[in-house]
Image 1 (cartoon, rainbow, N blue to C red):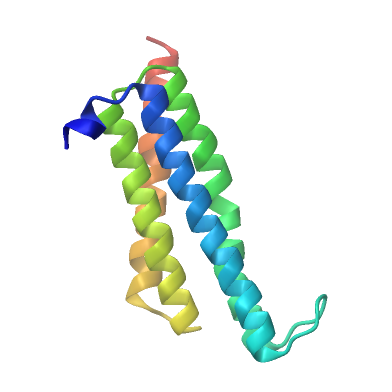
Image 2: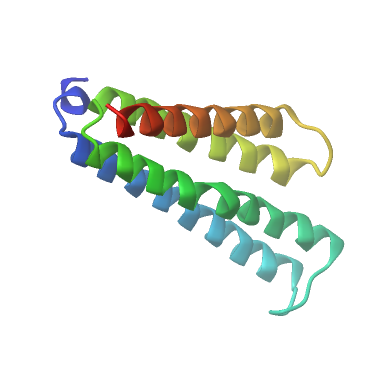
Length: 135
């Protein structure tokens, strides 16, 4: 555990952004694999494949802006534990959300937990950035 708390804010931000990039890569690979499995040509879609692409697109809506927020936390010198907390909640939330959405087009606990975790991350990052911008 000391390895995470001993990191500088910049190292903590870099690690969490790296993990989020791997999540995005995993989602991209999932969509590509499903395109081949479902035999959907590039530029085409089907109702089933539309849900598959939605798994990746939901992450595309949130992850880049939150990655920028994580980098900004690092630039402001926020404690590494805080950056790790935000990053961990976001990584887990996006994975849980993707699993929930890929397994059901309707309500799922994964989608709910993933969405709530992502919204909490938005609030934690935005709040910290606004407070520290004026201090």
